[in-house]
Image (cartoon, rainbow, N blue to C red; front, side, top):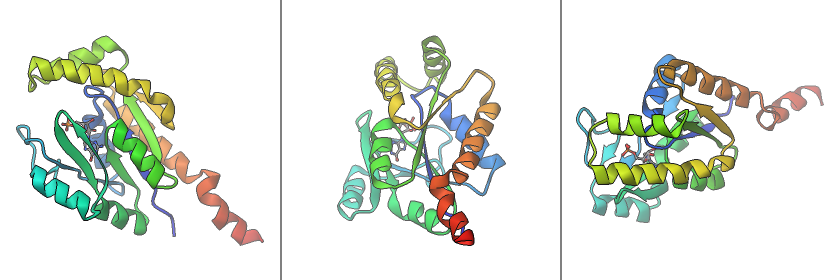
Length: 202
Ligand code: 5GP
């Protein structure tokens, strides 16, 4: 059976990864998207169980203790983490799964899940990053400043990722397809094909 591969997609705030991931999933519904748990408040339009599982700090800590969280981090004074069960279910059934998570969590997953592939999405330049971040209009100036600083720190970790993809303005569709090409290519990686192919001949 075709094995599912775990793909991590990270990108600094304002890299547009939310839109890109949405386009990727709607065009290729065979790929699962992990829904994270968080203690932050929902933004307008966000639904529980769709965008995130919005839970209390107390509940989050209980889930960590029970070993139900694959990786987690604190970001902007809130917890964010990946529920282990859904990831396991997808991979065991041969489905690829995407984790849209920040760099700290990405590095935890790379260590824990053998064969996982990390992709970093970046805006084309620093000006575009700041414009996109301010354009959202949902955060205070302090939060925007903090996110800009954090974005720079995140981009410094690019060499730890397997792939980089630039998300140009108005090109989220092309960007999503480029990520899909990476997903397809990884299924041809000899690391994933060697056993099955050699078995047929020897
Ligand atoms: P936001 O509050 O903008 O939805 O997310 C803030 C940051 O947390 C983003 O970089 C997002 O990718 C990251 N994030 C979302 N879910 C998770 C998660 O489950 N684990 C980790 N480590 N980061 C996450």
